[in-house]
Image 1 (tube, rainbow, N blue to C red):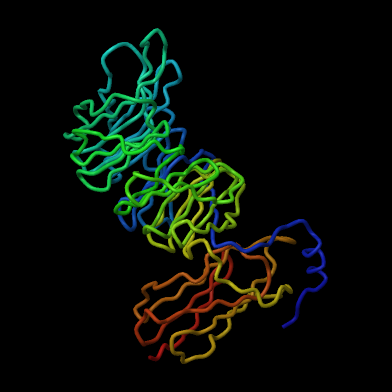
Image 2 (image 1 turned 90 degrees about the vertical axis):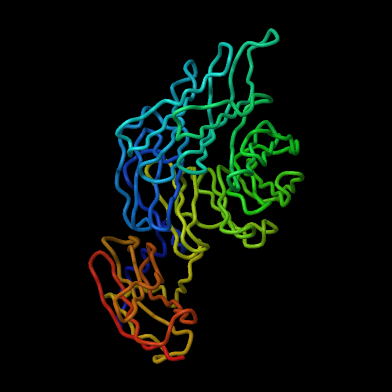
Length: 426
């Protein structure tokens, strides 16, 4: 194969960074996306600060606007489906942060009837759905008390889908987050204090006063994590004690998601993504491909996940954020090439090599997708979904979890597509 070595000279000495990443970036609009939730294995929502909500029904392959008429600027969002959605709306410092709900995909929005006794402003921070009827919200009520104007922590609950709300707790300081493990057991966090209920919010018990602040991760049994600015706090006894883990992070963290008690991700400012596979004993920084603040993260399994950022950026990974691509030649090919896998037939593992030429100009990266299909045409895995620099690469296809038979692998970009056949024999 002939190579364009004179072009390689310009690429090598340009200021383009070519570090590989397991995260793929796409831009949809210019909104600041402040949260993401999946309500089944295929479908989820992204919440835009301006009031736009995006929806996917195919695991993030496509995101389309499903709601553009939120009641105001969005501070937080949660959903049970594309119909049942709750939002915290920013009405400004002199009006508060109320909660709004819809049960018909945004055709109508109902303001939650939350007003503690006394005069003051309600500033809610979080909504959490247990099911279609039961939900909680928390935050603070700023009121004049004991000759001063200050916050009191509040928790409110609905048992009829948001039609009526009752006060579950009013004490302490601003509550920043609330999560439930099941119908009965939940925790609320704020002001360095964690409270727990085991009877659906009828009573709350102060569990600990932890020297941490931030957002809680999704819980697993008695284990959950709290993003504490530059570090992570972990509890394995539902908040009785916390261990501060040194994440060695240089930027504030904004959220975390765990696929089990030990394997998870945390995200934060300036494109920060860190990952642990040993319950936070070690955290490894990943290349997110962006410098935007990352405001939320969600994983469908240990490999497939999404992160949402400012300025319309959505990140996705199909490899747990780790690039499984090996660069075997950085010289620039003249053409796209997809080679026959080797060995073929194969038992368990086989290597697929491919070459990517120059894109639309010197230093341009190409969006490359390499998928594997079974004999029926069903997609079984995505081996590559990244923006790659020109060069020659190889990936290893692991067939241990697949049945013996004929498979097809397809390399595609915006201007090229080729498919080859391979045989797995066990």
